[in-house]
Structure formats: C-alpha cells, structure tokens
Length: 88
Image 1 (tube, helix red, strand yellow):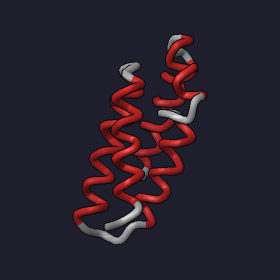
Image 2: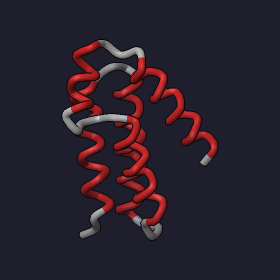
Image 3: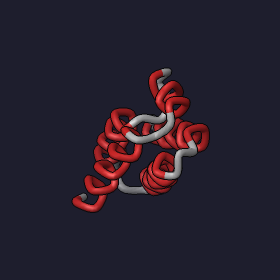
Image 4: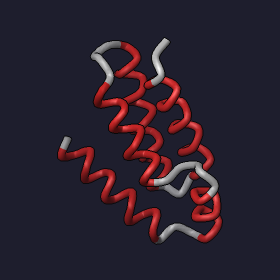
C-alpha cells in the first residue's frame, strides 16, 4: 500500500510537468492522478480473485504509461482496470 501511494505521488509529479498536450488529454477525463486514485480505491474493495489481479496489473501499466508520458496507453490501461472493477 505504501509503495502504491509512492507511485501515485510520483505520477502526480510527472503529470504536473507533462507537456501541454498531455494535460489537455487528462482534462478530457482520460488518464489522470485523480482517475488512477479512484480506480485503485475500487480495486482495493474488490474480493480477491482473477478480476482483482487483472485490475491491479492494468492499473500498474497505466501508472507506468503516465510516468512515461504515454497518455493514450495510460487511458487504455485505466479503462481496462475500471472495467475489471465492475465484475463479470
């Protein structure tokens, strides 16, 4: 949990210094620190199982993409993580 919060903090800093184009995409509801945090909270509330594991992997990939300035990939992974939290 502490590692996850550290990654969130790093992502927030990376987002703050990202290019203007990345900020424009995040403002449209895509990949942002706030959306990552909301999704992580939903993942923590999930029961253990395959769905939770998939969601955790997708959120980690979204964070990595955000840190590397790949906003499209970040949004895609975040979307997959959000869908995984909805259950099947």
